Each structure stands twice: as structure tokens, then as C-alpha cells.
Length: 166
Length: 234
Image 1 (cartoon, rainbow over the protein chains, first blue to last red):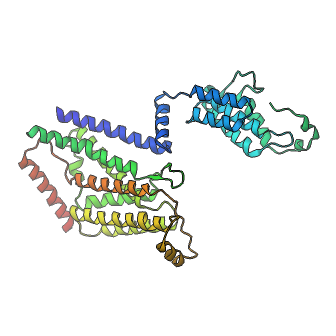
Image 2 (tube, chains in turn cyan, brown; image 1 turned 180 degrees about the horizontal axis):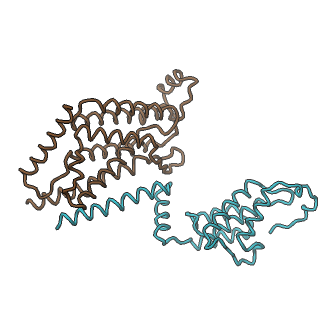
Image 3 (spheres, rainbow over the protein chains, first blue to last red; image 1 turned 90 degrees about the horizontal axis):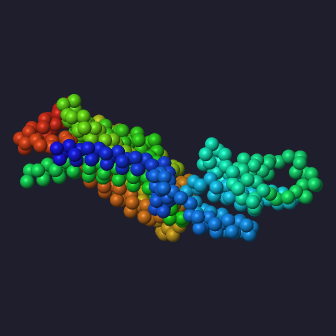
């Protein structure tokens, strides 16, 4: 009987350990901390650090976008929270926005972040009720970022000097 | 007394051996970046899977593993399943052991792969027994380890010495692309290879016959030895 128990335990343990190895190679964590974060995501206990998120928001409202993004990166290290990723994208948008021209590299990073937010949101719909923002949905922000990266004749319109940052 | 022996054998056979082999599978692809000190997990390249298949064939041909004893219709399903998992763990451990000593890319990757393929292919037609095969594998992996983690990594280390100067003079104009990894990568690889050899030592040609009397066990082993000697004489 004891032998059978050991055999069953051995089979179960081997399968669990093998799954763990496959998961490690699939997620490719870069540190032990990331292993812990990925484990939290896998078991569904992952949560955004609210304090750091609020710090990031305060920095964002003072137009300190890089510092805000650093705070949000620490608040959501696994990049699994749609709202945080929406704000990260917004920070890239505001930092890349210019009256004369847009910074393409910043807008592209913003697009990556907003796409992450859309993919993470239920049904791909994300709305953020923040009165300080002029765009409240991920779809609006994505359109704005996409238009910013496209080149067209409209770019030569001198009236664009009067446009407003959203 | 007998209960303890049987229980310990079962623990070794069904838990410790697969754990050791799977640990090799985990560590074989682990590297640590020289600059950022971050983990880099390199999944086994296709060539290492081919090498692992060749090595598996060699294990069977040399009688180091008697498949008919490991997987048999007469055995309970649970035992067969446990044995199958151990053999799969051995396969992936072999692939990752090769991954651990193969340079990651460039000319050296293909040169090392070619030498491994050549060695394993020619060994398929040599007369081997389990013990000689194990010795041969230890020498092969040790050589590859020394070449990769001592010579090649030393050659491309930022603070490389006289050996680097000689090699760069000899290999002038030949681009050999070797990614820079932290020295701890060598230690991880060494540990993985040591575990692999330990795993090979624990895996016998015939799985442990739990609860069998000494006479029965000797009969089974004798049978396996006779079969492997028949194979060799063929």
C-alpha cells in the first residue's frame, strides 16, 4: 500500500514539477521577484500596489510623466492591470505630444501600452472615469496615438499649431 | 528492515530520480546575463532534441536501459506511467544537458552540434555496455563544458588575457558571435551536468523490482544482461 502511495505521489509530483518547468520557460522570468509576480498572476492573487499607483497618478497630474511611468511600472510589474496600462499609454501620449510635431517613438510605446490595456480589459472595452483626462476610453486613446504615428498631408496644415493636447 | 529498504528504493526510484532529471531540464537552459544579471531561459534548440534521441537510442543499444523491462504489459498501469514519466524526464534532461554545453548561436553552435552528432552517430555502431557508455558520456560532456565555459567564455570575456589575444590573432576576420553571460552561468551548468550524471547513475538498465526477493531480482537482472549481451554479439 505504502509503495502505491509513493508511486502515486511520484507521478503527481513529476507532472507538477514538469508543468512548473514548462511554465518557467513560457513566461521567461528575469529574476526571482518576477517568478513570484508571475506565480501571483497564475494563481489569481495578483494585485496592483495602490499606493504606488496613486503616487504615479499625482506625478502624472504634475506632468512628470517619466517618474509617473516608473511608479506605475513598480505598481504593476507584470503589466496585467488594464487601468494602469491605460495611464501608462496616456503618459506616453502626453509626453510625446507637441504643437509642431509628435514624437513617434513615444507614441509607438503608447500604442503598445494601450493595446495591452485593451487586451486585458473584459471584452476589450475599457473606460476610465477621470475628470482630469479628456479621453476616457482606451479606444479613443488608441485612435489618437495611431493618428499621431501616421504621416499625411494634414501635417502641413498651419492651423494644427492651435490644436490642444487632450 | 525490509520495509525500510523497499520504501527507500521506491522513494529513490519514483520521486528522487525524476526530480533530479527534471532539475537538469530546468537548469540546462538557464543563463545569467553578464550586464543586467537577469535570468535568460533558453528553450532547447531543435538540434538538442535530435541529440537526445540519438543518446536515448544509444542507451537502449548499450543496454543501459532495457525498455522491455521499463515498459511492460505485465506491470500495473501506474508503474508503467511512472516509468514513462521517468524516461521522458531523462529525454528532456539529456536535451537540456546538451543545451547547457552548446554555445547559444553562431559558428561555434554549429561546430559543437556537428561534433556531438558525429560522436553519437558513430557510437551507435560501437560495442558498448552501460558502464562504458556512462564513462564516455562523462568525458564528452566534461570536454564540451571546458570548451564552452572555460575556453570560449574566457576568450570573449571583456577582461580576457593572453589567450584572448592569441585567439583573436588566429581567428582574425572570422566572426564568432558569442553572447556574454555572467560567470555564474558556468556554475549553473556544472551543477546541472553533475545532477545529470547522478541521474544516469540512479537509472539502472532494469527498474527496481519492489517487493521482489533477492533471487527474483538477480534473475531479472541476469535476464537483462543476457539480452544486452545478445544485442552486442549481434
